[in-house]
Amino acid sequence: KMDADAYTYPVKSVPWDPKEAPDPRLAALRDERGYSYADVLTIHPDSLPGYDAHVKNFFTEHIHDAEEIRYILGGSGFFDVRDLKDKWVRVHV
Image (cartoon, rainbow, N blue to C red; front, side, top):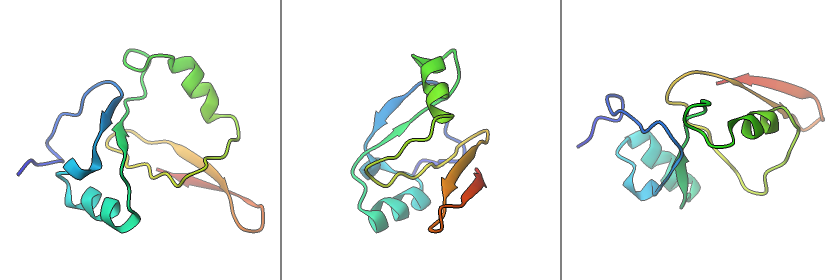
């Protein structure tokens, strides 16, 4: 069985079938939430085509039509989301 913590993830964005999740935490999320698609994404100018546009989009309020989970493998960031009372909440990931 592959050790997900020791695995060297690709330095690019690649489609990834969550049925292949070697990490039991990812498998549990996948099964509990019924996910059928995932990708591995490295957010760095050297590896993400259209890096500037992608990063700019992070600073523009937008809505996704489906639930999304971010499983951070390295680095960190912030997500600003609205609560049920329309108050902004910042989440550090």
